[in-house]
Length: 374
Image 1 (cartoon, helix red, strand yellow):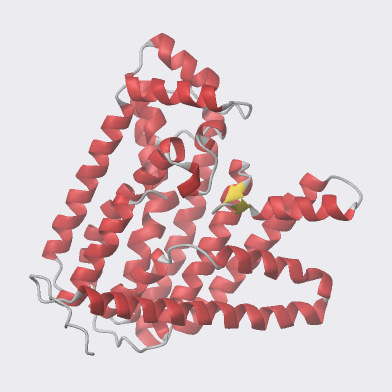
Image 2 (cartoon, helix red, strand yellow; image 1 turned 90 degrees about the vertical axis):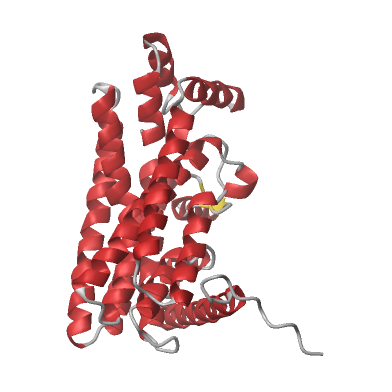
């Protein structure tokens, strides 16, 4: 029996068709990742079988995730007139997945995170390997050093794949965006590290502004804006369309990261895959925390600063710190800012001159980004 035809949305697009197109792209992306890792596994095997855990740790990390950046690259390509069956967005999306893996590996080292997506983080995997084997010297140092190398290997893979996705003048335009994205992320990571070192000795207004700047360059741009622009540039999008992409994707990326910061404090560990309140133990001075410090009375600020970054915080202490953040109005203010950024993104999407299917696909991705629970 034939199934009933999918019902179009008001704009004429069919959600089922979009889902099918995305599923096909994800499948091709997974095949691309697996095939590339198989090739690199052979390269490392030729060097030494003892180096293969580097590939295994990367394969484990890249096997999960939402593929959000790669999908944005794909729809940036499609909305700019690219063919849905072309290989370029798949290869570029694979490059973005390895770049994301590098960022996650290095971020977990910097933040001293024990878990990622419900599994031990890469540096913890290598620490455990050292301990289980009974090797000499410090297992923690070995774990961090090995993870740094795994992250660097991901960066090398990303560069190799992105180069393969480029051709002609469109490749030149995309290369400029890709290079800028990498620099932005590294600078944002450093500013985040610096913010923890600077600590509470700054005015609340400055702290909030700095937190938003870190959020923008460490995450928002490379999570949403740059992937969409990369896909568009590879398909030959002109400056006007790329600027319109940015108008939509940058506020969306900021809302996405603000939601991530909220989940880092208030998220359900069964859903997020990270321990409850892990961002508080790691001492992350996010916009949420900056607002709490700026809005709280002197005594409240002192208590937050005293507890923030204490790795020994138990669940009760995390609950107390959460309560202080809520009482200052910081959570409500952050939720309000997420709504403002989201509204700006959707308003820009309404102005975007692209086909109905691409617009609807981008709308669905945007809705998932700002309402997610993990």
